[in-house]
Image 1 (cartoon, rainbow, N blue to C red):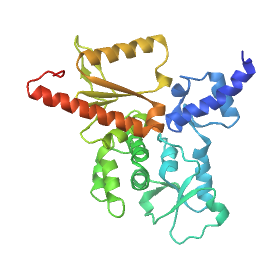
Image 2: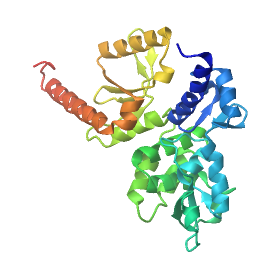
Image 3: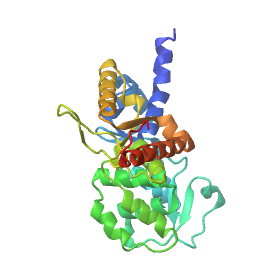
Image 4: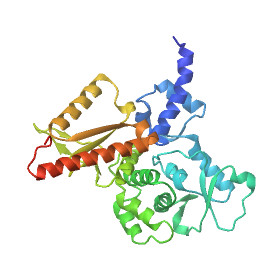
Length: 312
């Protein structure tokens, strides 16, 4: 049996890993799902996590990005900017992401401290040393993979700092390299996506032909109960669930999950469940499953339209 001290020491790295999975920022309530108040206090004391304000926690990289950007006479940008605004990201960058003006010389040793991009920023695109919320979303959409960019855009809408109309208006003005990439993110961003885990699953689904999922669609079950799955394709009758073990623990929650799954299945929905590790680390397999599900459900739909049973 590990000693009490060993368990306490192990708790802090687990807490940091939990914050990484949550997107680099978290509320006190989110962290207390897996950690005790003592563990949280210990992580704060040793600098493993920071508390910029009451009830809100961030990884140390968030504050580090401001210091590095200031030293480089640059601006905090991309995912580092997103974290500064308290948005959750799919991947916390290993080094601060910073924009410096074109033509500005940066010493070699300074380059190693940050991931640099050069760009001309208008005054309205910078707020207190950080790219503005809209510029941050557009930069992420232009330069990052779809799952990373969509996670940021969804979180921006969820935070309330940006509205869907802001992204719609911005889409009409987008020009330059990567325009189609940016437009795709601005159009697909959705405030109902709960976290980067769900956003990443949706990003994979967006690349599957014939699949059109919508976040958090309410489904009325027999008897009047209503459930809200993570992603739903109403046409195909397909439900995608992002199952995070941090929030699916305990007998009561397991019972609820089983009831939800069984009720959806007997109502005729095809339900696919994916873990965090699968969505984040096994995307090719997840896409393969989705492609096969679409093919199966499309064949079933065609048979039903011809008056045949699904088993015919």
